[in-house]
Length: 249
Image 1 (cartoon, rainbow, N blue to C red):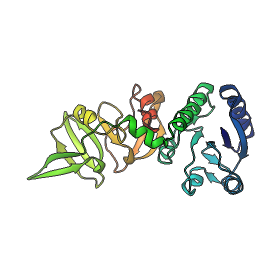
Image 2: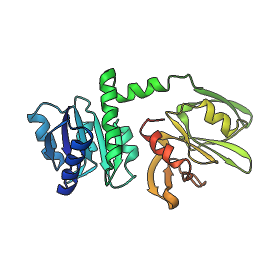
Image 3: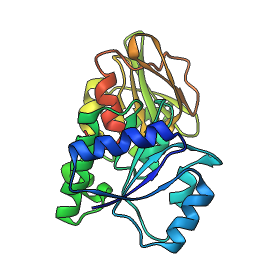
Image 4: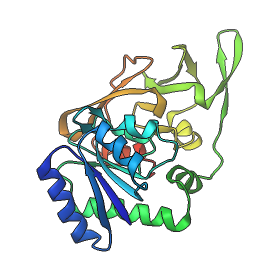
C-alpha cells in the first residue's frame, strides 16, 4: 500500500511514520505535504496513493477542500486535535477519524479497515450500507390538527420527548405531536441516518450543524432547525455516537 501524509507539523509527521512502521511495516509512505496547494500539485504530478492520512488543518485551509474537487475518490483517514470536524469527515466519506495524539491501536484499526474494504473492492459507504441492509420504515402517518400528514424519514430533523409527550420536528421547523414512542422510532428509523443521543432526543445526521466538547467527555450538538431541548450526548452513548458519525454502527 502506498500512503500519502498530509500534515503541517513536523513532529506529527514523524510520529505517523513511526506508527506506520510499527502497525503496518509492509506499507510505504510515498509523499508528505503540508498545504492544500502543495497536495494538489503532488496529486497532479504523481500517481494517486492508495491511502491518505490527512490532518484536517493544513497551512492554507481545511483538507476537505482537496477531496471535494478530485475526479477520483480517495480513501482518507482524517486526523484532528478536535472532535469538531467528525461530521465533515463523514460527509467527505472519510474512512476513519482519529484524534491527536494518534493512538497506535486506533491507527492500526483504521488501516485494517482500508484493507478490508479493498479486499472486498467496495467503496466505504457501499460497504457500510450492506452492513445495514435491513429494511427500515421510511414513511410515517401522523395527526396534524384536523389533517393527517404523511412524513418521510428524510424530512425528520429530530424527535424529542417533553412531559411524557413525543414531538417530531421537520426541516421546515414544523413541530408535530405524535403518538409513536421514542423507542419505536429508534427501532424503525434507519440507523445510518438517525441516532438517539440521550433519553430524550433522536437526531438526523443532516440536522447536526456543529459539535462542541461538553462535560464528562460528552458532545454538545447545535441542530438546524434549532432545538430548545438539551442536545448533548449522554455519557454512555457518546462512544457509539462517534462510531455512528463514521458509519461504524
